Length: 192
Image (spheres, rainbow, N blue to C red):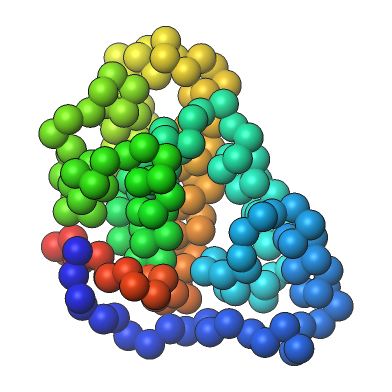
């Protein structure tokens, strides 16, 4: 990780006092659906209330109710955040990943952009699946077969859903230049 500080944020949080009716409704729906603070990507998405509502509902399923364990889900989220060099997403989910059972060595390796040395069968398969999907934009038959054997069809679909959903959040926050959470550092940029 790095202490490099990028340019100023573009889409700073809007005061709830300035929300229009659609934004107030989206916030109310968010609060009723989620048990998390309104932070990070949601301050960007509030500018498009209907998109916020649909995105947060998909995220609620993928994060809390999908077929995959929290440990696997957090592993995937960290891989996506690293791929997008998304500081807020990585900083937030670093803590969640540790709480879900990922080791500091695994999280650090991901932050450094390298495959962790000690991965069990599930995490090794997920690493292969996600990195193939992100780099080649598809998954090989061999990797798909391993993921299918471990997680079933719904698990494979949910795995792809997590990659897609957190990519949406990451690219949106990168457009807005959302900084990492307080106490977290900026990820090192990959060479161009």
